Image (cartoon, rainbow over all chains, first blue to last red; front, side, top):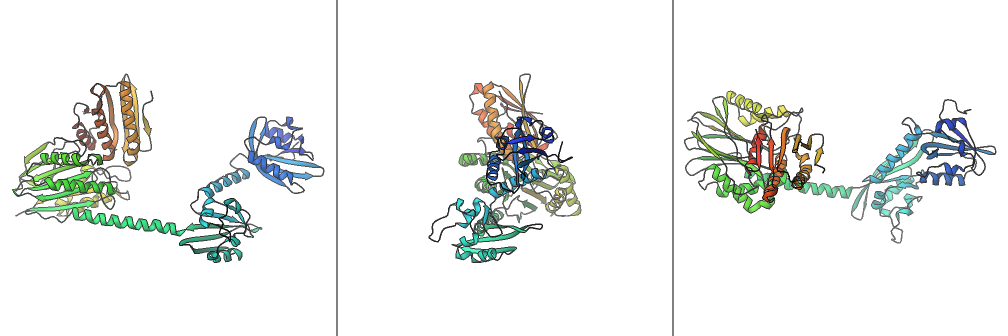
Length: 479
Length: 123
């Protein structure tokens, strides 16, 4: 016989010492057992895994009069643990315990237990100080961060222990500097946001009243933030940003894009992933009139890669006019970097292209870098590429190629950030799109780098740039 | 003996043994997120190969769409590590590349230049 038809509630009858005297049929069906509980104490029903529940039940039973005990805890019946809502009431001489399994998602008790877990996790891990106050302003619950921020002490300057906070009237514990907060709490303001200054620190206090239907004000939630810490972080960020801007200026000065060479049009686009980048280029006129192009791509991005470019540029500048060909110059550069900076692991790819004084012969060498692309009329010709990475192992040989190209109209050097840029579907921009955008610019008389970047931006859409991008385009000027 | 394995959303490395031949299969995009795992896995793989007395490892890049320069740098370190191993314990790396991916041709050639006797690229 069940007392609550259709509801999953079992019933235990207890005597004045809370020993089980009867177990109803609904209980036995719900928990697949329980007849053997008769004669046992209610305490014995609580699972060994739920010590907190056992303590809570024991405390409530000790002070039980004519009220209702309403707890969520884990019981063990026939060797199986079940999370239940347990309600205990007096009915004449008897005590009745209503037991309701609550371990499914649609149980209100289950949701309550989950919400408690979430609140507890949030409370303990929050970077903000959190305290819950009773309607009379007493501390109900707080986290460690609140205790750290408030630095409570007695009038005699003795620091209070964290355990001493619970149950105390917060407004009476606040220092004089926090009078506005004490006033807001005393006057029971529903919402407030205050800025408090104490001992060189700036704290922000945000209060909010928590209400329940019919009951009205239940608690006050007070959040405390240390704005001075945030300000310190903001100040430090500002210094880093300023340093980065300065570094970007240095790099811009190092990588001057406004280069002029007699008889050649030079068009350069440099777009680092961050404020500074790991790409590097240089255009030099040799004593015999040869124009030497250099492009490099250091491993990584950002400041580390940018510092690598400084080293590479410095070492390259020291040898670029030595009169050696592109291959031998890369060998010398690799040896200098590995000899001086091997521990820094400055690995990079690079290419050098020499354009003869009469602009008809192209001589080049690469080290793990995309080869130059030459346009004859509107046809792109990919020149040879090969050779090892630079900066990793000394005494490397870089193959060199030389060929006569009397009719070339454009020469393109780039870093792989151009061709390996991706669209939202993950497709790479690739060589074919690159060449098409170069050809379009050449046919329409547009600036090549600007046209490529416009196509690249349209292709990648909202995708964030994922690598440094450098394009170096050289065109013989018609005399 | 457990062989190194790794899998995340964009990149995976699987080392399998098939008829006495060890193959390390790299799949997906080895970008910045793969640098950390690879920096641990490649030295582990080297140790396992030495332990087994392996003479060769197939490195399958056929389904590897992209590898950034920081990851490639780890392969350079790996090659250096093999070179520094006593000659009788050294093993070869046989890269199987995807000829449709241009970066592979360029980067694997650049790696092979360091040790043409230890690093082979097919095709």
